[in-house]
Length: 69
Image (cartoon, helix red, strand yellow):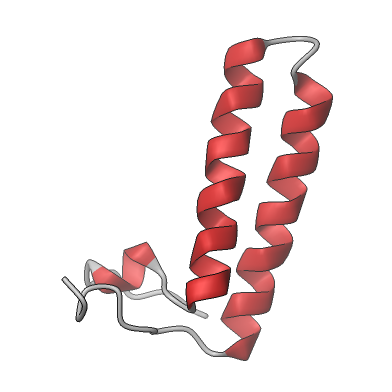
């Protein structure tokens, strides 16, 4: 399992995922009034993106999917 979570992102990829995570969390905060489920979904996605950024790990790359970043 530790090899599965091995860092596979460079600085640019980490910054991009961090920005996406922050944007998703802002979207979650703004959407809770309209739809609780949408807010929860965006918050979970944002938290996961921040986890990827902090860990330097991309789930898609770990599964063998080629990404540009």
